[in-house]
Length: 515
Ligand code: AHR
Image 1 (cartoon, rainbow, N blue to C red):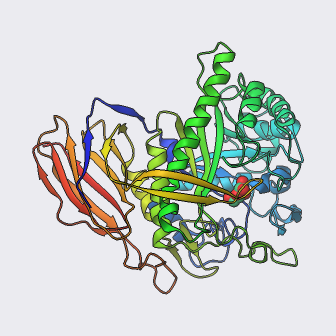
Image 2 (cartoon, rainbow, N blue to C red; image 1 turned 90 degrees about the vertical axis):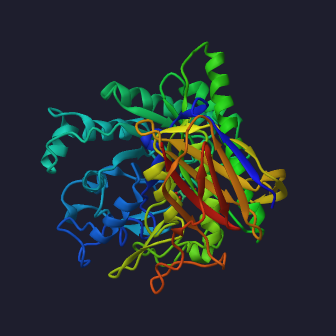
Image 3 (cartoon, helix red, strand yellow; image 1 turned 30 degrees about the vertical axis):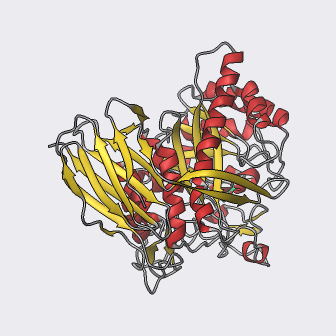
């Protein structure tokens, strides 16, 4: 491949990454909660039943905010079922995932787990089978200091101090026919507005996210965001976006190209939100919460895998085993988020453990890192700071990405996909720069030449690559380190310059300090 040139200028900045950009998601779904973060009786579990082997990996992954309790699950959830004495909590049928919910883990346990993990909690309210009344009661239960029935009930349950949850989602994917009590944009816009008003009357310090449509390919996309924001604009700070990338077509170059569609999706939602602001004659800017994103397809359409008969508790569903190739596409999604740090101020990797997750466990057994763990952990640790606007000159390829979500099966033509997808983040305190770079060419190495304007001669802090001869390689209980970062050798540094050779089909991180 010919040389790929990049110019970075510390004066050309996209935006600062918000710590909330590095969030994840815990849903009552399969073994995410039960057998995932929570497993009383596990050898590493504490007295609350929290698995500490999982907790250690979560700390290494470093998510900053955690969405809970769904997802589709929240649209049928009675939060009151899962607070108070555990032996009095009802078991319920969960119609989102056709399983039995024992409710032995609920809001208070989740908040305790977040505090232990040093993660900000994000709660979603049920705007499917329920509406504003249940939502406002939950805010009162969680955030009101005391002296009312709901806040005193929290104290009676053992949580004297308010939880002070700041970030709330107004339902989940309410345009999806799979949702319990899906809504039209008008219906949802009205219900979300009324819920938002009451929630903020109780606690004006909270921030609220309205549901965007559940995917860019939904027939509702675009008009949904416009209508919903016209209703909710004065009451919300955020609009949500969801994307799951796939390789149904067995077309790896197209899969690796697909994160570029996420860039377009983000830019379209920004345009719609700003158009609503313009029509409201408002300088307010709605920020984007990309509160579900990942690679997900093998366990998505396969109903036999998704639904286990007999209403089991915590069935093994959506346990996607991630490959090397998935980690590359996933890394591309990380780059899309970083490169929109000016408007995507919050994002949640869906999900955290076992269910389409970076961390896998065996119930009663060990926990290990999936391939997608590594780009996320690197982004969370080293993606904090000012994202620089990179000028990239890279050869391109043509791809056609198949995405079946929505009314019709769809192919997205992508005529000019740069082989290099990258992001660069400057640490404002030290001036150190981290380059995250994906070589999407499956056969050819990439000679990379990065010019750092007025930087001086950089010093190498660290250079890592994630690659494997077999794009279908996975990490398993037996071989938990089959796919893992290794040193990227041969990085050469000179005045205002970094040069490196990126292996075919590789994710790379190069960190350099000021001279
Ligand atoms: O993350 C899995 C599911 O995907 C969520 O429950 C839902 O919101 C989305 O469709």
